[in-house]
Length: 474
Image 1 (cartoon, rainbow, N blue to C red):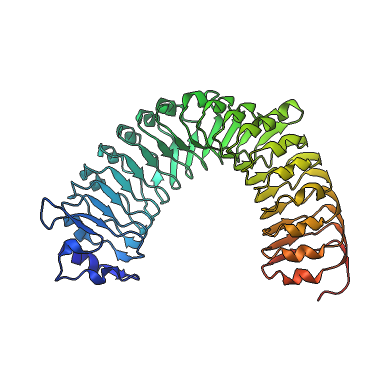
Image 2 (tube, rainbow, N blue to C red; image 1 turned 90 degrees about the vertical axis):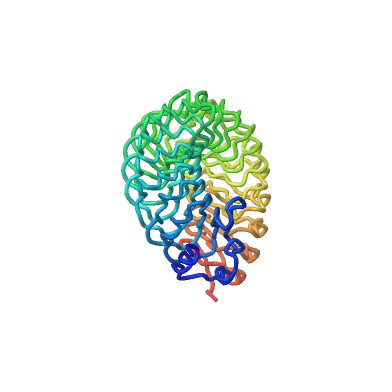
C-alpha cells in the first residue's frame, strides 16, 4: 500500500520502471524493492538509482518502518524531504543528485541507526542542524553542493565514528571549528567552496593517523601554512588548498608525506622558492602551483625542477603565472614519461626551449605562452604527436612555421599569436582535422592562405590578423 502511494507521486518515469509494479503481484518481487527474510513482506530496501524519475517523494515512505536502505539518488525528485522520524532501522539514506528544496529537519536524528547520509547536489537551504551530532553511528555525511548557510556546527565533533565529512560548495561561513580535531577516524574532510575564514586549522593535526584527503579549496583562509604540516599529516594522499589567501612559503615538510599524490595550491599568495623536497614524492601525479608569487631567479632556486624528475608518477604540472625567471632547465626532458599536462605560461622565462622537451611524448597540453622565449620550435615540436592544446603566444619565437605542425593531427587548440614567426602557412596544416581554434595573429607570416585550411570543418575560431598575407580569400 505504501509503495503504491509512493508510485502515485511519480509524474515522470521515462524508462518505464514502474510498469512492473503491479498491484496484484508480490511487491517483494518488484524491481528496486527488497524485503526481509525474517519478517515476511516487510520492505528493508528501496533502491531506484539513476532512472530520471520526477515528482515528489511521498510521505508514505515514512511508514516503511523496517526500511534499512533508501537510495533514490540521481533522479529528478523535487519538493521536501520525506518524514523519516519513524525509520529507526534506517542505515543508508541517499537522496543525492535530485532537486529537493528543503531544510534538513532535526527529526532526522530519530533515525539513530544511520551510518550513511548523502543529501549532496540538491537545493537544500538553512543551517546544518547541530543535532546531527546525535547520529552516533554515522560514518559518512555528505551535504555538498547545496545552499546551506551558517557555521559548521562544533557539535559535529561528537560524531567520533565519522570517516567522511563532505560539506563542500555551500555558503558556510565562520572558522573551521576546533572540535573537528576530535574526529580521529576521519579519512576525508571536504569543506571547499564555502566562505570559511581564519588560518589553517591546526586542530586537524590530531587526525594524523587517519586523514587521507583534505579539501579546503575556494574559501577565504589566510595566513601562513604550518611549516610542519607534512610531518603532522603523514597519511595524506590528496591536498586541496587552492583558491584561498594563504601566504608565505610552501612547507618543505610536504615532501615527507610519501603517499601524497595530489597537491593543489594554485591561486594563493605563496612566495619564495619551490622546495626541492617535493621531488621525494614518487606517488605524486598532480602538482598545481599556478597563480602565486613563487620565485626562481638563479640556478639554485631552479633546483626543484631537477628534483621533480624523480616524480615518476607525475601526469599534471602547472607552474604558470608565477615569478619564474631565466631559461627552462635542460632537465625538462627528464620529467615523468607519462606527463600529460605541462603549463609554464605567464612567467618571465627566457632563452630557447630545450630540445629535450621532445622526450615528453605523452603531452596533450603544453602551455609556454606569455614569456620571453626565443629561438625556433622546429627541433622539438614534431615529436609531441599527442598534443591537443599548444599555446606559445606572446613570446619572441622566430623562424618559419614548422612543417612538423602538420604531424600534430590531434591538435584542438593552436595559439602561436604575438611572436615573430615568418614564412608561409604550411599547406599540411590541413592535416589538423580536429582543430577548433587557430591563432596565428601578430607575426610576420607571408604568402597566400593555403586552401587546405578550408578543409578543417571543425574550426570555429580563426585569427590570422596583423601579418603579411597576400592573395585572395576563397
